[in-house]
Length: 280
Image (cartoon, rainbow, N blue to C red):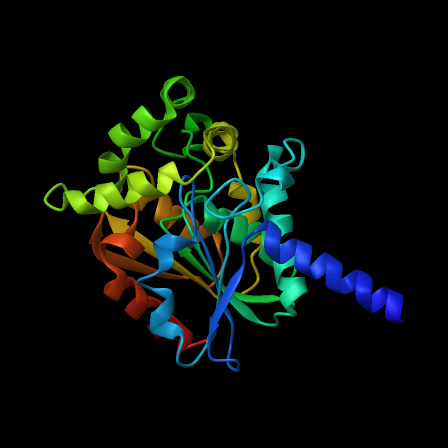
């Protein structure tokens, strides 16, 4: 038993170190797990997570390759699909022994949450999908408008691969929106710069070419879809598609513009999450 306990402790420590997991807030209460999107890290939740710290444990982490994660843990084969990132989430939940947690995921982090919830139904009891997109590619045959053609995505990936920092500086204002608040785009650029460029290139390919539309029907936990206004990456049509596909989900249209309401409108984002928690 001592050997098993020691091994479990080493495994737990390794998981938490790998994803630079940080836990704050109240020790009791329903846990909230916050997952960032592409090009970001846990730092982007610093205006939202503290709003729940009085009554909830809050768990933040970095996807491998981002922020303070362990870059040596990056395995190209493991992270060649979003399933690898979902497996990380499950391992984090196991390591912390989370039960009935609320997973709050932004953009691709939302899709990762959908996959993780199906892997660990006892660990994740609710989903908050912030600006989600299960598939960025248009699918005319299926009548689905993801917002981008394959040529659009190929051009985006080629530009990113050629000059990641230049791409970040050019695209951050587009993704963020709010042209009257340039400091928000600067915030996003800084987040991009905390991501390893080589890993970011691979993660971008996995993110923008993924198609997880069929996984939405398998969601069996209460779900909130938070849709931004004027979002160039995840349009209202995409958000409403997610809402239709996830049975019993709730759809909330935010006044916040752009793709990152947790940065541009953290108070509105936190209020929508809190209202959802009060009903689940």
